[in-house]
Amino acid sequence: MAFLEIDDLTVRLPEGRAARPILDGVSLRVEKGESVGLVGESGSGKSVACRSVLGLLPAKAQVSGEVRVDGRDVLGLNKASLRSLRSREVAMVFQDPRASVNPMRRVGDFLTEGMRAAGIAPAVAAARALELLEAVGIRDPEGAMRRHPHHFSGGMLQRVVIAAALAGEPSLLLADEPTTALDVTTQAEVIGILTRLQAERGTGMLFVTHDLELAAAVCDRVYVMYAGRIVETQTAEGLFAKPRHPYTAGLLASTPRLDPDAGPPRAIPGRPVSLAEAPTGCAFAARCAHVQPRCTDEAPALTRHDDAYAACFRADEGILT
Image (tube, rainbow, N blue to C red):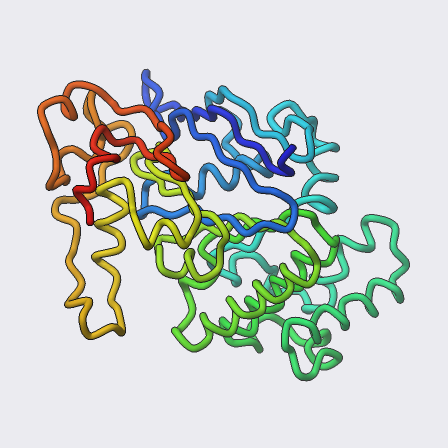
């Protein structure tokens, strides 16, 4: 049994007299110690799927399906059980580190708060916080404990947030676009820290990003989302070698490459659509170079093709290679 199991998750948010669909039948797995990527353009539903694992969906959301962490149904947990889940089993690193901390409190208080709330003695919690700051590459951990968040650059503060996420020794780490707000050099440093700590501690990780190449570098397997649905999943290596869905191929083609033979990046035509805008058939049909009449009338199911799964009627035709 996988540590994280999302099965047929559907989410709708009230909008006037109707309900706007956000996710439709999303299913994914993360094993213990495994890194799994969740990729797609902005608005595809990645963050909503990620936040569902911690029970962070809006109170008025209409939700069906299952989200299980270590066999427990998250969607059915009460507030006390959710607090326990968030402090011990699952931790999250958000996109903007400054939105994760209280600017009026010292970093040491931020790092030790959860541990002290769990009954750990203040001195033990402080020692643990110092170890974590050192592990994420903070050179003066004792000085950092006494500083406020505004004393840190974005990259340094993201390291602090990662340290806080690991304070409860979680079995699963949710990383929701953790490097988007950082410059390229700092991005590489933060990714290096995440992957090293994840490997050393055997923590499972769900890595949410819009960058398919970054996901492939970090993750063992990758799920590709479009308009609130999973359209492809396979190993990171297989995804680059033989994408099965035109959307995946488009994401790869739009990524700049160092290889001179790769040519310039090519943007996917058109614009992303939300699930609420999606047509009756394939949501990607209007942007797809390989569309056929059937695609506009019928939504393809996610089906197996060798070692991959893809929601495309032409996944086995070799049209993308």
